[in-house]
Length: 324
Image (cartoon, rainbow, N blue to C red; front, side):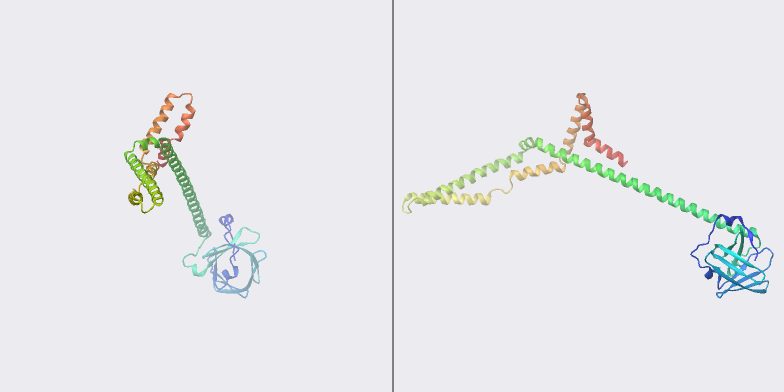
């Protein structure tokens, strides 16, 4: 078995310690590479026997795997070798001679039709091609990893941007809600006083309240007047008529008085304002007021700026810029 110097194999070791050397070697015939043109064939048997054939001349030997130092011992009558597995793929098994930088190369005979090197240059090209593919795969993997990192970073930025927009939207909504409620609390009397429907409801309620009050008081008074007189007196008959009248009036009020009242109408107006029906007026007025403060009150300029930063228009503009 000849060994050769091959610098490229010194750059890396491709033999996994998880591989079973016996499984790799046995039940196969291996062509041993040499540059003499001789056909050198090794057959490793599971019982430790080694059959070596050189151009059909057979030599018997032994082999064993030493797990302590991960070495293969090849023994013949004239010479023995200690070799360390260095590289393995489906085609080549490279073994490094112990204590040297020289390698022996065995090729699976089943693969020899597609690859049967005649020179060390061909072997070197084979390993260079493997190394080139390895480097390309590493570079490709790095590119994919970099792209994945960029994609993750972009997703993170987008998520932060969405969260920021969401927070700004919530700030805008909270600002709107506060301004609507403030507007209602400050202007509800004026709004209700100028609402014809509300005034009509209040007037109708007042009339019905008066009628209800009269009917209840009349019913009570006529009832006591009725029970305080003798049924044989004429006054008793008059009291009965009054009691019947006021009782029927009470029933009429109870049945026919309007169900809608001014408090419900007032609540509906407030809800409309809170829902945004008056936004065009509320926030236009608010913005105009802030501009007036900014132009006329130089002493409180910082307060005006802080107020403007809180305004709806500022937040909306910021929101639009973020979306763009």
